[in-house]
Image 1: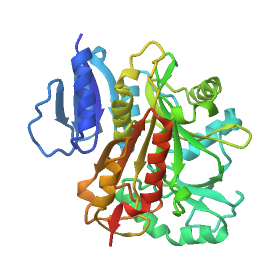
Image 2 (image 1 turned 180 degrees about the vertical axis):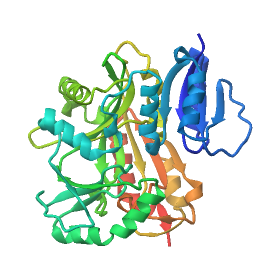
Image 3 (image 1 turned 120 degrees about the horizontal axis):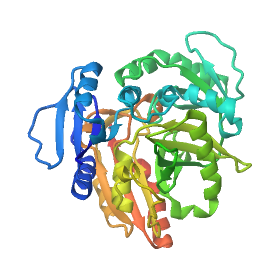
Image 4 (image 1 turned 135 degrees about the horizontal axis):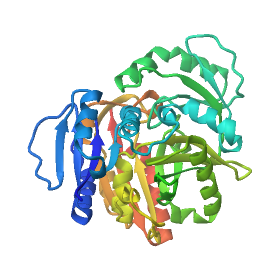
Length: 409
């Protein structure tokens, strides 16, 4: 029977790596992709097994999906953070398996609340805080402050003391405007315990039977390691580089506790966690969508289509006999992005570990800065090598020259 991968987005934008995954599903499994969107610059779509449809509102979208037989829908997906709740409501109303506590999908405070009730050892201490009031702070400094529903480290800041909190609070009006511009209008804030240890992240899919299948883990390094005052991640490093640090059975048990807490079903989960000084795993955030970076990474690095996790029946054996890292570039100053350092770009491309460099052309002559003030990265650089010595040499070269790549004024 013909099957359809449903993707619900606000605005249709062409991304090559998404299209590659859609085409791959069609070629190998005869699964066609339908992208439902509200905004679309109409142009001909030539890819086989791929089409775009418009919808007016949620009810119209639900009606169109009802017209597609349930047996024909392979999976309902979204790449948009702001549509996560709507997509889960769709799954529920169309009688698909769904996560029982799906309200946590856009609420970091609820994630921590439910985990504290069931498995307090899996999460960090936190406090809800109203920035428009003078509330007592019960979390010790240093700590983190973050909006409960933002993405990509937007608005996340490290507070070393009460003075930092007052500075953050003073900038609240600008934060609210930035949130609204990025569709995060109804936002709360939390203060949470700061764990100054290493952070890891990975993606897994939980099927209707509560079985889950994961991709290789990634270690995250913070941009603060470059003496830049921000807590966005600037580099992700593949599992081969740190595999001796990881106890897979411990992670398996850790994930099981989250599935049990939230009754997770029929969804992707992107899981960020830290390991503290006692080697305890502490959840920082769970996100229920896969955006372009993860499709791209698994495609380019592991030659794997992430959508294959949806119908797999057994653990996938990834080839991980290499070292890999992907860097994303942020501006240290709030200036206009003028261009990229061509001389440095040439040196990047000459590295033995060089895989690819993606520059975001439309961000040229736009304002740029750090993630804590709601800006996103401007480019990405990937390196890959089986030789650890060569990999580390190139890694250190990028790290040393990181601040020189973006030309701002």
